[in-house]
Length: 506
Image 1 (cartoon, rainbow, N blue to C red):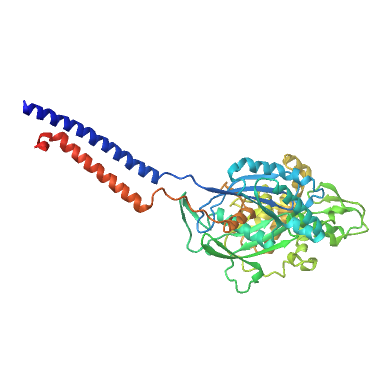
Image 2: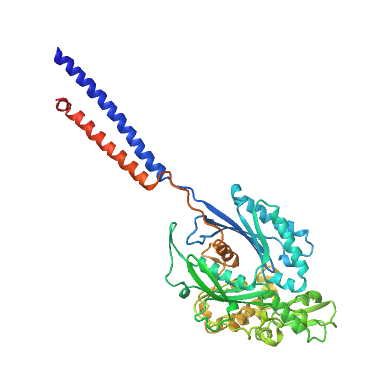
């Protein structure tokens, strides 16, 4: 009887002991999993945003950029997430300042939609005006200040962190373009994986040079082999992703595509005996009329103003490539320049070397003419193409490219000839196959100065440390070891009780 009662007590204690141990086991397992999951929980990435307006001579484009707040070696990994081309002309051409809010508002509204609302107040907004405003500053400094003030007032009315609207220098425009293309081509850093970045050992030997052609100016920027004989005013220094770079950069004001055409025609018009200008850079059969105030209204062309001419000039194309190039070459004669910026022969450019990326009007012109492929390997091939294209009658060209804006279409003979001549004057006669014409690099972002501007600015925007872990590393390790050992002890003890209960009680 006594033995039966002891047996029932032992079975009761054994079964209840197993329940208690099982409960402890489950609690330890939950605790172990909870500590591991909480400590290693994937944290949402903290992104920053920035807005840059590229206010060029012929149009304005808004770019929205995004980068991780943690940064890498003090520089953000910046991505373009939106580009909005503002409808209308370049801001330098606006005289009615009340039009500017209408001009900019559509893209600013787009920025409000793209950027998360809780990020609006901390998102910086910059506007950089380029050569169009530089030229206007020569003529009407007061108007320039009013335009920039009007733009500033508009931007301040939006819930963003407005940082200023200003005219960027020609050196900034060239060097930021250099940063952009080398960043997008992976020459400043190589993206091996989303969380891992590797840099080349010697960036200066692998970076691309940058060739930028706008409407009012053109820039050349590259890392020189030897800086000894280069003016310090033409050298810019950057620190990006923990590395230092020194680049040569120079901008030629009035040598942008649009201003060069006005300059050339104004110069030729001074030799007229009538109001008819025979223009070899336009197709045969092309005719148009231009107001003399427009022809001589530019800072670059007004020195040729012929006061005896009437209100308009008739222009008739003759379509002769050689004569067109000859008239363009006369622009590069130093005697025709009245500012330091437009002098070619007086500027010391270090020896050209390595690969160059040509963008903006370089790309748009050569892309239209189908001269951007790798098959176009020599200057002679480009020359033959331009001779054939310029001599094509306007009626044929107009019919073949009926969907192209007539103003742009009529100027492609000049633009192609001008690009070829400009590259010759810059020293690329023997290096044509080292030029790559770039627009959207790898289909990702447009080549231009604005991305480089944003990249450089991220050096001045403080990085943010990732949020701290719930447990310190020693505490985390201690908890994991403690609960693991406790699980092991409970498991062993439960196994012994279950399999050898009689031996256990003895």
